[in-house]
Each structure stands twice: as C-alpha cells, then as structure tokens.
Image 1 (cartoon, rainbow, N blue to C red):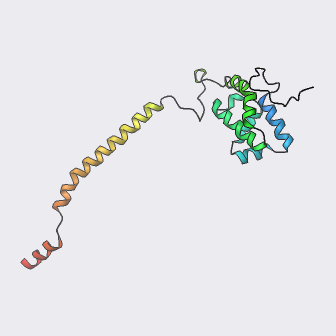
Image 2: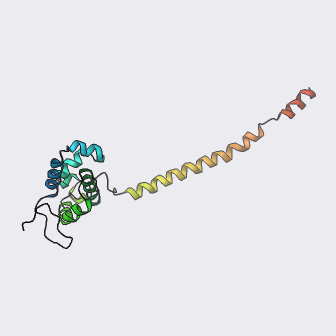
Image 3: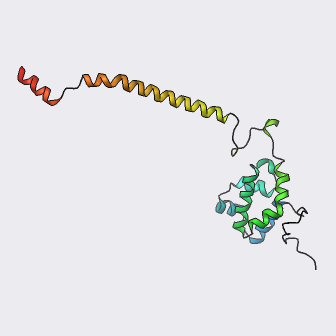
Length: 164
C-alpha cells in the first residue's frame, strides 16, 4: 500500500521530511483557499514573518521558540494539528534555525532577543532613579521646616487683629 506523502510519520521516525516546512504550509493553506493576508489577520502574525516562513527564509525569522509558536498558530488557523506538524518538521526547524545570522558576524540582532549591555543599562537606570529619589527627599526635608515657620493659623490672626 502506497503511503500518502502528507501522512505524518510516527514520532520515532528519524527520516527528514520530503518537503520543506514553508512549502508544506503554503500547500495546505492554498488547499483550504486561504490567503496569507487572512492568516496574518487571524493569527496576528506579521505578514513579512509569514512570507519568510513560507519562503523558508530563516535569516529573517526570530529565534526557534518564536518560529515554533508561529507554526503552531498558523497550523491551528488552517486546521492542521500543530503538534503533529511540529513533530514532523522538528529537525528541519532545528537545522534551518542555525542559518540565522549571528551577532559575531555583524548582525545587530532581532527585536525579540535580549540585547547585549541590557544589564548595564538596568543598573544605570536604577542609579538615576535612586539619585532622583534622594534629591527629592533631601529637598523635601530642607523645604518642609521653612514652610512650617511661615504658617499662621486663623486663631493667631484673630489675636493679632485684637492686639492692634
């Protein structure tokens, strides 16, 4: 009995998929009569990310966990089982995710990733906020006694009026 190329292999299968993930998703989406714009609107995944995913252009995609999330959302929308699809293409995604440019090669990184030096900017922000708080408290301590000396109560005003 010939097997259908779209049948999902069992999880113990180590054979790579016969087709790229992007081509597989595009084929299934087209078979459902759904446009990429409809997938983008329904899943709230940026159209450029979906285009890169279908074109298997992993240089333009974020880190692997995000790719897996995008694939899951995409699959749910077009009626595929996300777990089975991810199992089928897990090794493929692993291999292709390695193609992403590294910062060492001059790439500035992705919006989703933690930036280098983020820890030092947090320390700087905490120091500025602490300094501002100390200056504010110092000003309050210095100004508050001066304000007390200038207050004249209503009773004292009436006494001053009767004395004159």
